[in-house]
Image 1: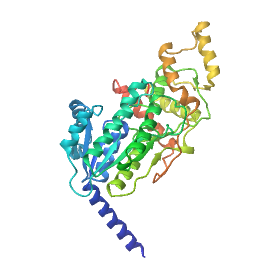
Image 2: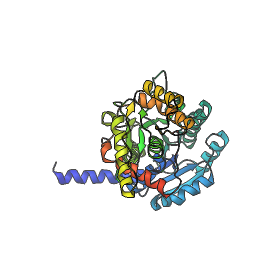
Image 3: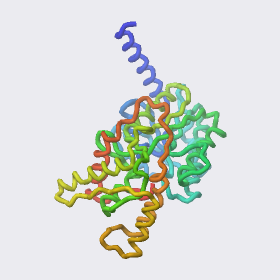
Length: 383
């Protein structure tokens, strides 16, 4: 077959798939999150005729999201309000929506989650297990539905111990879906720690590594604890959104359920290299602003960190500037499991490899820095 016939066949197949996608209702939770908002922006761009419904916890959150959403998303999105922790509210939403017309049915992308690494077991279970159950009930109540669960590459189903309640509750929800909702033929999309867009650095929520950026920029710590050679698996949010779009489009076009792990794998940066790159990016802005540059931030093993931390207090060392002890101990305590052991699932089923971290970290840091320079930023200190 010649190239013209191959290209013609590809174009024809793309048009058939687009027609199927446009005939399918895409129902999305967590539209306002870092992954959810970028996913909808990419979906509206890739499939402009897609019928998208977003589920929000309150009318105020729906209105706030629509006010800041890209024009294409706001035009394509129908907002529904539902308390997904409540069975009656979820059943009422299923009744309002009804079965999707046409053969495409509904693809429900469940991206909502309680992403806090310090949530109580009860809060994590409610946000990540109970809400997932109710959302799966919603998909079942609509009929002719496919279920796509957005999970974390940092949690493993067979692990005996988890680093926090977030990981444990996400794994519990995934096991529950496979065990109790096989009729929905669920697919799982597990992504790594997301940072800003690979070209612009933009992101809608400053979770993950961003609180550590704040620690370095504001308090200029003389050292940080952690395994300097340990890999910190980070990925840009636009790449994650593209991979999530691809899986959603496959399901909307009648494709088989499959799992995807959108992680960097062996391409993830060593912690020491990531910290050095962050300091370099911050210093570039400091030079432009005429501010003193940050010194290097060496990494020390946790045993030495604990000794140095106690010594600063016991010996009243004033030459070493450290932030408020309660804040520092809480932040480092939350991050400690990842700074000591940042194991994540290896990449699986992605259509492309994640961009190299060195190509986007500068932009991610600059976007975060500029957001703080403009005023209070939406920073989650422990997630």
